[in-house]
Length: 195
Image (cartoon, rainbow, N blue to C red):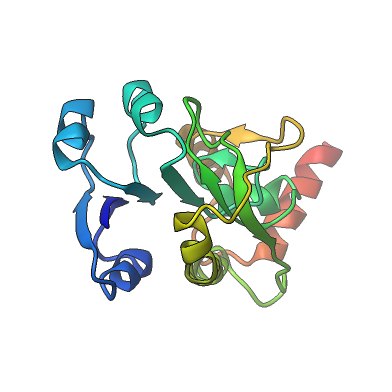
């Protein structure tokens, strides 16, 4: 089987895929439909990929492109889902979904909701937990994804979406960093809502 991995080869997901007897290719740069057709992958796995997958690629490989997203979709589509799940007090978790022609809106193959210790965890430590959780979910689900045993289900409700500039503005204005405790983010949001 030939798998095209969109993201960085340093991720644990890519490293796990290397243990199979696949023809495994990766790119972290924007990819064209011409290049994908040239590769002829059986599956495309996106994890931490910083580029939009073009609609021509989605149309050609629909149902064979999955994305690993560290949010409990439909909540926190787009950038920085970890931060937004605490700031907006939305469900937290990880999701593997089919890629469609919009951003993080594809049908869900499998997901897992998570709880966090707000006093103990920081943005950095919760991010690490989410990355480990998405890896574990991927490992548990990969064979069922490849063999088509998982039935994709539409996302329910509109959920939320954010871009990077939204987070950057809040980080700068309120002196938030990746070492900020989760309880401080929740407290900040409550203070702002009371003003």
